[in-house]
Length: 453
Image (tube, rainbow, N blue to C red; front, side):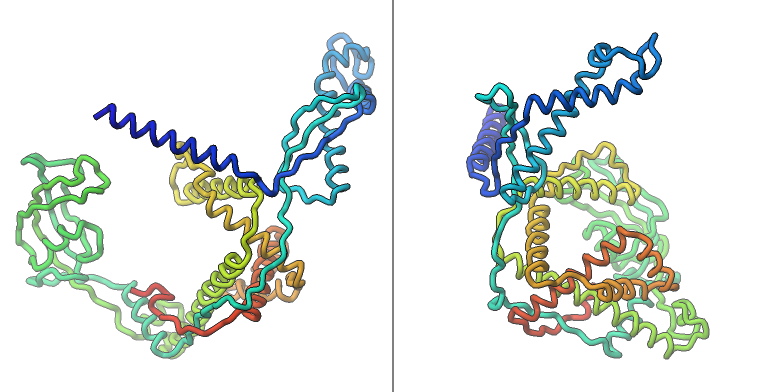
């Protein structure tokens, strides 16, 4: 068995190597090569100038600053000066070469030393990628189903029911048989081969029947039981159960129901209105505030769905090559964002090997879409105007208690202002797509849009 496993593993490695080699063999249409020439004479002059500058502050035991012999300065700082001078010279020569050819460099070049027939020159071969040059495709034939939904009294009442369910209380109900939606307080112990197993025992455990806290077989066993009843039943864990020592195993549970609590929704009264922030408890005012907030949320979700379709239409119409350097940068950015998100959730990401390669596909899509949007904005002059940026900020600020303070904060934070500008630009792009594609309205489901269960 071990031999077969190793053979399979070897085949997997061989296949992966073959695939990687095949990918490497595919020429990159965006890769360019340029010779970068550095004059030895100019380089040595720059090195000398750097050493003279360093000599003014160089610290060598036995000498005052500015009085260190140049020979000693060169011995101590020569390598540093030469490295800095070479870097500056290569960068300058490369910049002049790409400007001469009107190339837009994506990412950073790799420099490889190259033999030169001229002893007075140092030559490097610069390998780099350029941004793709492309013509935007016509999207007139692209079909977009724009989701539409108006908030009516029915949606307001459905939202009220959700808010009531979120404030559900439970009341002990003597003699009641546990049913879905009830809360059952239970004791249980699980045994495998007659012996208790780790994690299979609890006392006074409050379980929402049908809430998915426990395996479906376990919850099914609780249904119909009343306080004081005890039941013994077999349960087979799923093959993919997280505890590998229990996966696929059949165990026996002994279960006792100690109490059954029935759910109780709060009444729609003044107290309920006050719990939602309506100080005077006016129910009609409560409904009107719910309608306003709900309309804003529904419109935001409809915009997100429409935007997604518009961007997908652009991606489908414009198949363009994407610089691998930009994909790598975006993959690394996404990996770092994932780590920060985990840490923000209180998880220790120190020993979690999040790899940028996990995000390559998503990063490739993001970069490609960014290039298309940038070209569309340039060609159609869709750049965000100041009043459009202001509108985006005001719309976001409207959800806060002090909108004016939020607006001031945005305008005092260049990064936040840039984010608002990006959103405004994307709104312009979406509007352009909707104006040029084949668009039809499609009624949206309130429950599905708002994820109401």
